[in-house]
Image (tube, rainbow, N blue to C red; front, side):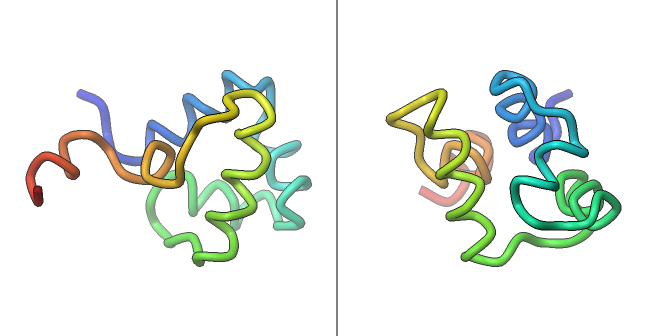
Length: 78
C-alpha cells in the first residue's frame, strides 16, 4: 500500500537525490530530513516551497499538492 509520505520519496528518487544529498539541498540535517520524509515531523510551508523548487527542475509543472498530498487524501476531502 502506498503511504502518504512515499510520494515525496518517489519524486526525490526520480530527481536522482539520496536522502543525504536532498537534505543538504534543503540545508537540513539528515536525521531531520529522514523524519520529515517518513511523516514523523511535518514540513513547514517554506520547506515545502524549497522542495517544490528543487523537484520542479526535473518536473516543471509539479505542484506542492502533487508532492505532499496523496490523491487518496485529495479525493476524500473534495
